[in-house]
View 1 (spheres, rainbow, N blue to C red):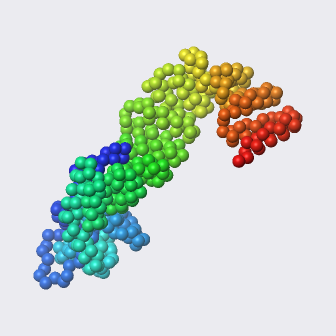
View 2 (view 1 turned 135 degrees about the vertical axis):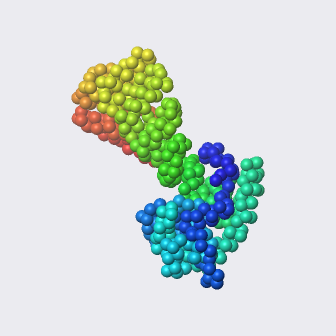
Length: 459
């Protein structure tokens, strides 16, 4: 368990976390898999073992399959085991086979060192034992002898980090994990300290090692996912934040960060679901989360979610912009008449709202009311004459009405308004203007606009 629970990655403190000691682990596990009979005198050298205990036989066989595919057994134990032996990768040292339960004793009897026993039943479910080689046991025992010193260094380093002496803290934490490479909390606190001093890659590498050693460490996944997001690596961040959310489905912080990572990775539809979950966990309508949810729904596009988010947002931010926002969402959802009503309400409160005029133009055009739509676009142009998008929308509307002359005039005015826009934007508008001239059989003018467009594309 932990002496202090880490804060989310935003604050990045150097956090104290206590590694579970060995006291009690052996006894707790022995109560599950071992019998009470004493070992007979003169017994041959006892095997050193690791043990995995899971609830079902299927899980046990899946663990065996993972081992046969090349995964280290101690990692499998840390990921799957339901017992306290998980903290040590299942290691129990040398155990007298005579003290094992009959099923475990029979499984061990026919297994050579370096191999796994067959699956056998235990009081807690089903077990698998790894018989260690002498070399493996010697390495583990060497590490265990160093463990008290490593734990002392972990505590001292963590305390120094909390007091702000990061340079010394990092030295001690680095020494702790060198003495005990399986010290997950050592890697965790080392990672936090490295992040605080700006050693980003080293920090993330240390946190990945903490996760490898402790695959169900919620905090480690949350920190690493947040760090990857901070370093503009959203696709990688999603992987770790999804795991964090799976480990603690009620963590607001995990779902909020996961939603943001989905957004940054261009996965708007997934972001919609994550934002919804975060809002549900928060239990109230937070404006910032609602805005993020609405923006993701609009990009998805997810009309029903956009309408729901927009209406909730209007509840916490009343005013004409709320009506415009709901109108935009309704339009996305195919509800043009309802959207038009919202835009009209907005214009009633703010007649100079460009967004409301443009939105009402889109809604009325969709309803087949093109003349009305053109009037609203002209009103938007009067209010915001420097925005080329309004001219382009008006030109397209005139084109749909078979008014090529007005479509050309509108787009020509738009080209003039776009003089400060990016060259690619200007070139695209000129290409479309040339196409309109072609339709109007004004070939000389069309060729002239194409030359202007090509000149803009030249380096």
